[in-house]
Amino acid sequence: MISLEPKDLSTGRLHGYLLSAVGPRPIAFASTVDANGVPNLSPFSYFNVFSSNPPILVFSPARRVRDNTTKHTLENILQHKEVVINSVNFDLVQQMSLSSTEYDKGVNEFEKAGLTMLKSDMVKPFRVAEAPVQFECKVNDVISLGTEGGAGNLIICEVVKFHISDEVLNEDLTINQEALDLVARAGGSYYSRAKAGFFEIPKPIKNIGIGVDSMPEHIKNSMILTGNDLGMLGNVSALPTLEEISAFVKDVSTRYPNISTMSHRERQTIARNHLSFGDVESAWKLLLSDNVKE
Image (cartoon, rainbow, N blue to C red; front, side, top):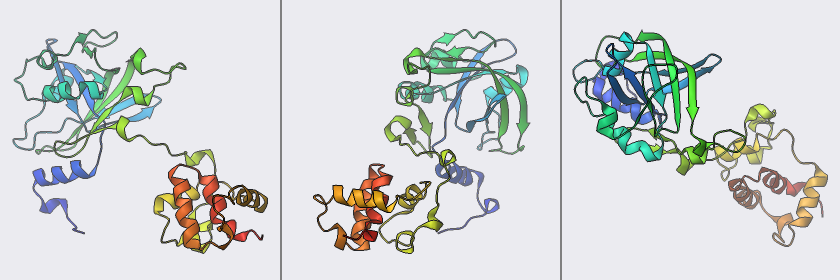
């Protein structure tokens, strides 16, 4: 493992490390207008949601590393404190990338990228009609983080109205993550397609898990079970009872005829298979089946 101090690195190299290690990052496709109403559109991956009440989004157009100049988006927002933040899905990713080209000031990136300007209801900047979600925002504050190349400028945006395409909504009006198909930014030229990598983890807040520290030593110190496996096992609120384990052993006796004589290693190997399918209950019963007397 290498250990580095930021002061010993060039800004460009530090920038590369940070963006490669912290990701994938959501993309704010920011639409602004200057004092004369000329539109601008540009993507930023220093972006996230920071509050629900009030609804706050924050993104950061950093000063250019190579020459310490500022982005048109930042200049526009300092003149006119409104912005529309559009979400970027897979269908938009190439046009979004094209819009990041550093065109001269006054050039309309909507037109360059072949995107449709859609009039907003409460702010002057236009929405990207093709974006599945569009947040109309007022800018509450702009916080400069430095004056040198690479320094960020936190733009704190309060959502005043937002729009969600019917195509990404479930019947109960929640957002269908698969249909939304967002993309995110990684290091270099890499992106990540969220839809291709979704998986679910039950939130621990829903119950108080027993924790890894409460597990039997041979499970806690297993050479078979991974940290993720232990995390899943530790998220149960109670271990299965002896009666439940006995019933399980009886049910699986045909599939695992030697269950009563299995070693810990064998039980843990099979339990890992159950965990790969999210079947934590069966995994626990299998792991504790050595307590059942036939």
